[in-house]
Length: 114
Length: 111
Image (cartoon, rainbow over all chains, first blue to last red; front, side, top):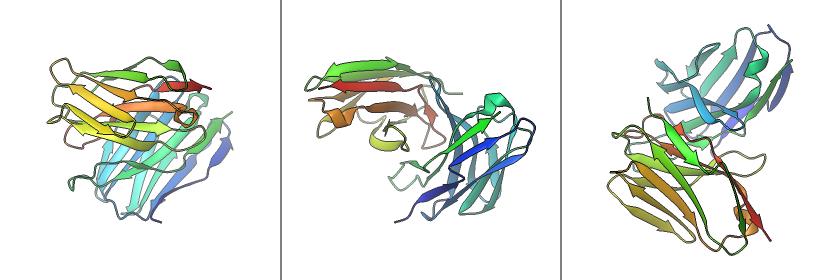
């Protein structure tokens, strides 16, 4: 089945380290997103991309960067990880405009910064 | 940007009873309102959505209502079952543009 795959699923890293979270999809969607989930705060948008040449900041982009290497790949980087970036991170894809606006989420990456 | 508020943050209901979750949004231009269900340890999944040209939509035991004037929308789950226990998120967007999510409601269905 077409899916959205995130790697790694779990990661513990030290403060100040650079870390990359990867997302790949086989759904053929143009739109890809990175969300962060924290208890009591819901899902907050970090970055989004509507095609390979289009990258946009979300509501909480500070401390993060992204790369859209191909239509199917969208990576999130923490240049210098800090403890308050400990969270559950979700990648998502969508293909609106055809009456189908559902966002399909990856399995999530649980990141702990110590 | 869009601000979506969701209430309550937790909801405990007896099996068979109804559950109602309410959300408000700030941007009157928002026209797409999905609801996602996230079971423990799983990814969020769409359960129902509504567009601004519709006031109500039903799918078996779940329904969503939208009041554009008041800028609020609600999720109704009838005849709740244990498998309805999960975190539910509302969201809003303009023209299927980026989604803004509410903070989530943890629903517990007591047997």
